[in-house]
Image (tube, rainbow, N blue to C red; front, side, top):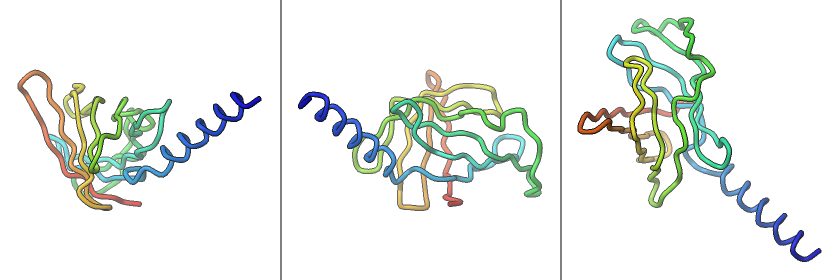
Length: 130
């Protein structure tokens, strides 16, 4: 019984810690190569951090239909320390490429996202929507 309670309490503590991560929320990406951008909800997925595309917009800020709505574009990210995240990947819809990635929460409303494939790297600054 003690083991069961210990495991249950540990699971609840981990769930609370994950749900309280300051990066969780909805973020606006920078425009991609074609000028489109997205709203991405960063949340917990299977014990890691993921980011699901909620909406897409064209360069004139008009919401557009996208086959990528509902797709996770941030995959398997883990919190490090000092607002840093790593060990995951980010899929870039404008290039249909997946980059080894990391993120840095600069403050509560600014997130630096970067990723590399071999020596080719990209960076974006995302802003919090909510």
